[in-house]
Image (tube, rainbow, N blue to C red; front, top):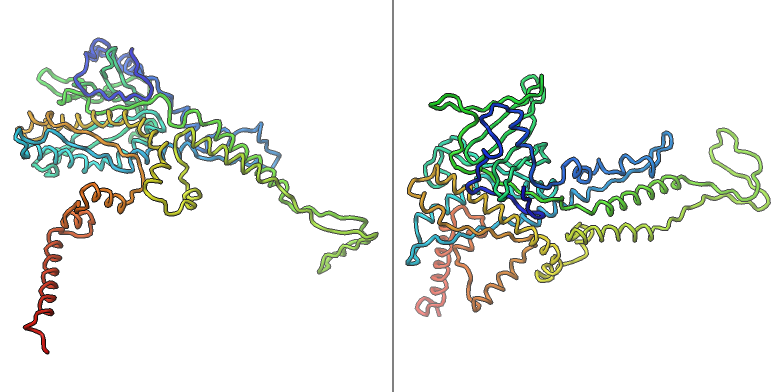
Length: 498
């Protein structure tokens, strides 16, 4: 099998190759079919290994009894830090905290006038994205992608009458994302020409008796199959059938004639290679915590001899010393600066190698009110990092858009069918930055020759507090007209009393 390069997205939803060259679904040997589909053809780090770094409670420091020994009832300090989890979340936020912008082209007639049919198609596509809450979906699957290396989003239609997409439809389009983080194993099958022949997923569900049952689900370009593993002998039984003129047929038909989903993978998680730095921080803090615990108990120093002893029940503790003796507590002085320097250095190296800024509250509170350009400069490295990742994401999003178009051709108006594929959609990913709205307005006005860049109606709509922006504008204009008439009356010579 030909494998793709590092962090490449395999999201083939174009017409597939012939899967029958690899797997015979009509053989009746379900075990052999499932085994063949489990032959993973992409080099992805197993989630079993990734989770040991991603989940803080599974870090080495939590179970190490050699470097951090427990002494009887006194347990050693074990401080774990979820830097991998934080890094994955932060990369997802930098990628999709600002929603993806979709730019549509080829939506006008040859004379440059708007094409109402294509405009309606654009609105339908946007309505589909809106109703599946695509911005939230992007954040969730980005976290899974950066943390567990692979995701698969399947799109499906449920029978439900609606007018959500600008036309009367009997179907509503939905999507669901699977990843190893959810306990789902993904098995893409890719041929020598780098075309995806099948996409399979294995997951577990509890039956009516509360027992876990394993299911194996496969999507090809024309069929959808589901098998269930028997608890008794471990064999596989097909559970999805379809009736046809020839009788019962395995699986169900996929009318799109393409896999109704998109798959993305990367060879290693976003935090690969950073484990050593994080472990050094954890062990340093844990060892120091043990030292603090040992030395925090007060130590009494007695100089000279003690004369007599304290009687039982005395209200005050009195030490009688002789020969110029003294009694005092010894205060422990720790070399804290060396420890702080070491931990700070490890943290700086961690975020530097991850190409992500440490935007914790402690770091941000000292910046003050810096300008937009200064913020952009500070986040240069992070934006370059997201730029590296954006290529794979854009390919993924474009393939996903093609799936949505395929669904629209099936359940959308018939007159749209020939125009849907002619509409080009460009996906623009904007790395996160805190926007300075005033700076942006001034920049746009300057580029526009100092003139207004939006109408009053657009300004009211952008503010978003009015339920009816047009009515609000008309009320403002009415009030301005009344105020203008009042001013004119006040300064009218004929109306003034001398």
